[in-house]
Image (cartoon, rainbow, N blue to C red):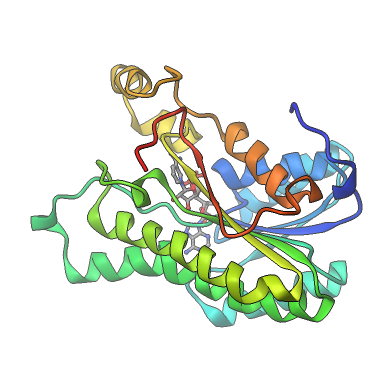
Length: 254
Ligand SMILES: NC(=O)c1ccc[n+]([C@@H]2O[C@H](COP(=O)([O-])OP(=O)(O)OC[C@H]3O[C@@H](n4cnc5c(N)ncnc54)[C@H](OP(=O)(O)O)[C@@H]3O)[C@@H](O)[C@H]2O)c1
């Protein structure tokens, strides 16, 4: 980890999608800065592993099992974390990831609705669950997870692109609405990030092709996204709100 943000120490964070991939790396890196972290996901075993790893490294973490497409499950997770930590300062709504390439001819209504639920409605529901606490304390940093697929057409399926473009607008709208109440809202839009899942599913030759399509000539790493998340969580970005950071190796067209 390259960065160090003294102001993060003692704060508390919720990271949805914290059981693996980008969310798990972000949770570990926040904990290393002295942040108490609650990781949310559906896979209890994977959450337990992340919590154990953070604890073994001297950090503080708890896990909450919840499907982020369910308002009721998010409300239960919110109650758990607010009871254990007292407050939430940083909300990282990172869960999602239904970007599998699917041609429009094979994109069923059911799949469309699942992707919108998983990658857009989930962010709305997560924000809705935790916003009352943030508003009551009059401070906080919300970080949403968009995607390069929401910034320009890509190999990912249409529903995923639309969902992530929606996350960008949700972020801008929310930033306008809650900025006067002391809350910042920003998005991250990663391009191809070499998570465990991507490493397992993308053949080496394709990884090289994708890397070559980025000006920085490599795939992104989970820590590249986590570093940007730490910056947005910290007061180092205290005058930034409503923006989307393209964590994309220079591959930007907007
Ligand atoms: N990797 C990339 O190249 C890339 C690029 C752009 C954007 N992103 C975005 O970054 C985020 C994280 O992706 P990743 O690559 O780290 O994926 P990943 O390794 O597959 O992890 C996905 C995470 O999201 C959680 N999740 C998914 N749906 C959920 C649901 N309905 N309820 C609760 N948790 C749910 C998973 O938890 P459980 O497994 O425990 O349920 C897991 O922790 C996603 O939003 C994805 O769209 C990724």
